[in-house]
Image (cartoon, rainbow, N blue to C red; front, side, top):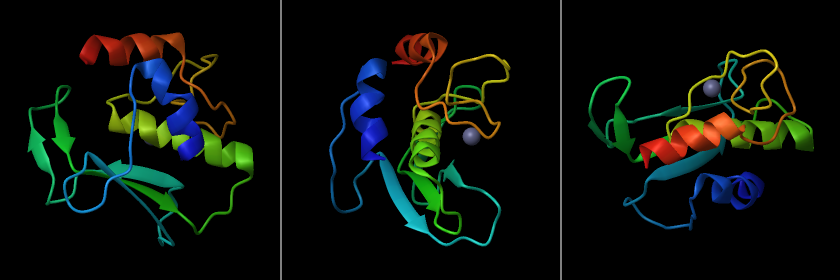
Length: 124
Ligand SMILES: [Zn+2]
């Protein structure tokens, strides 16, 4: 996660810092979940949620990493890049030849495409 925060978030124009307590934008948790997801992002009941799709947003998101699957380092970086992308509003990339970690195929792409960067900069 730190790898993606340090190497990919600056490309989106974001910095980050760890905080403790309940006042957070994104809480990152890792645990063994019984589902088949490597990771996912959701807005729990405690989150502040506004707007409607495609402009829905929330503070207090939760980014979950499923420890049930042991990924190689490149897979962990892909997952971190992908799930962090969701926290800033990026959606899945359907373009087969995209160089974005937002693709959903099993992949080892560990960075955002220029389209991702432009999309985030347009929103913030
Ligand atoms: Zn996803």
